[in-house]
Image (cartoon, rainbow, N blue to C red; front, side, top):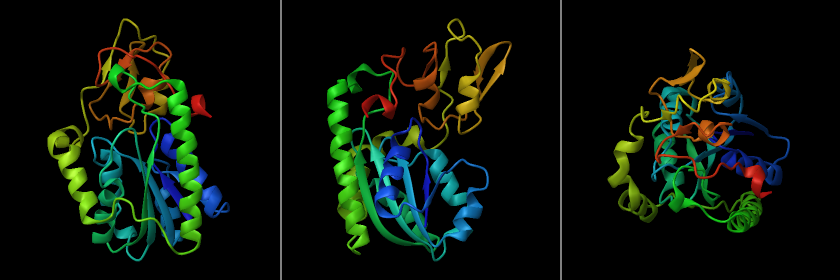
Length: 253
């Protein structure tokens, strides 16, 4: 077994690692953007795939990864974990339908609520205690779901028709344009940017480069908020105009 994940700010990675530790601690865990990940997929029949949900849709990087490597999925048994800040709808079902199309068998689905990573929108912010409570509740849900999978009664969240309708009508129809393509709306404040290069090093899309001691976006942002949460000068924004608060999962453990 192998755990494959895409995680912008650490939430999804945390959930995947927690689940794998409870279900099969010997399983390897590897980020989707890691070089050589396809080799690991080829060598493993059982896969746990984890990713966050953006606007009730797949991150573009995850959608592209599944489609680009369509020949790898035939016959694989896949359990899907979808993380979210507010609402998912058919989060697990999004990848499930694609993977099934390419011949995979979907074992189950699990939806996990986590602290929101969108750090430039004040309306989405919760208190530190609220976020700690969310993580505690999610930890318990992960342990229960891992036990259910061990006993061949995997959770089926996000996989049926009603979840599909909820995801479609809840957000996806209204915000489809946000996730259909990579975005060019990442904004870097050149006055605040010190050209440290941290954003360029951590970007899963290699979307950011340093030129003239300043960070530059190439218009291929997958909206993961990794660089925004980790910029030491709060010089990067995406949806909002300024960074309200930066957090990673470590702040709530």
